[in-house]
Image (cartoon, rainbow, N blue to C red; front, side):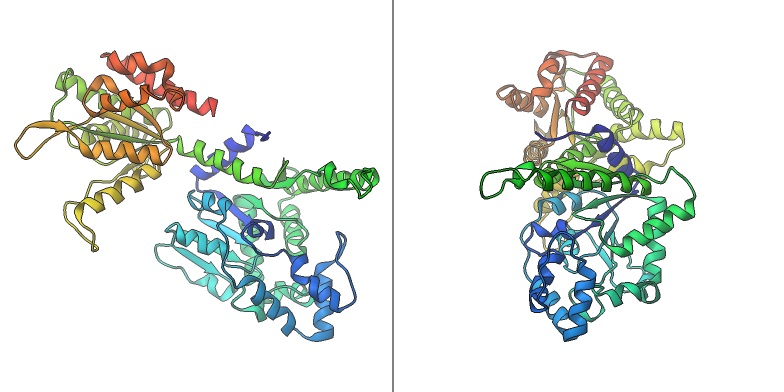
Length: 479
């Protein structure tokens, strides 16, 4: 059963909203994509030295011993061979890449982080050498600090004892930068064992310089010691080894707290992905996509319909939700006015609370207009955890009022992207068509069961808005 820590989830979501979350990826983050960890990388070299690798092996010293005996080239070739190959899909990184995380740190040599971010249309600014720190790539989305170098420059990779001992001479700005971010931002360590001597030294400096028993909160994942793994060939539990490893893990977890690093235990490594999926879903619940278009307002008086749209967006903003809109005819301008009304009354910045995507009116980039509109819709809805549908009509070429096919497409996209859908069916047109489909599969739309009557029949604006807010709040609690 998945372990749920709501305090951790709430903290991470808060830091995401403030663009204050940093990911630190260790070897474990890349392992599921087919890359090796340090022990596996060095196992062949250990064998050549007549040694074996176990839990207590000092891998940094092992790399140094090999270099002493055989020169650096063997290490370089191993880095190229093991990390310059195609990687398997990484579910954890795909989730992270879809979140607004603008800084990554890693000790890994592979290019998995930057490759995944680029596949997700993020513009990356990669720092593998401290001389690159002075350059700023325009319009970047993410900065990636590869503090131990990368596979493309193995001569400069940090791997031997010599490399670690000279680190603060060859890369002092990485140390300074990381130290500052550990004080200022919240880090989430994934796939990291905390055996790296560089990091331990930096953690100590941060703790010493702050002179406080209340450092910045950071988080990491550990897999809890599994007793089943201590069953020997005779079917007997090796209780001593199990108990010793449990004690070591508990002591390590307690020691990390000195540096503000809080540990989340998982039963399986796959649970890390599931936890991040939950965070992704809950984070997106704060972004509400409002879909609608209206040449006429059906059973609503024009003034009442406009008031409904204005007050709905105003209340959503007041309740700390952000709005995404495509500026639909007869709907978008009133949604935006409601947002502005609430934001300006509080003196907040509109860019932080409202995403407007008016549809292009001319083909460009080799795409026909219809495809551009589809791309626009997919992009907008991908940002939202909840999609609200209102009205949904337009005039055709003869001037006749018809259902808005663009809104039907937005409903289809919202379903494909697992957005939580709320049709205000009482406004009629496409919103009622959507509700009719939803009622045929209420197990999927469980969060609407208690609200269907109001959404279908109520004409009082305040009651409609209250119900929509209640549905979204219910999702935040029940997920």
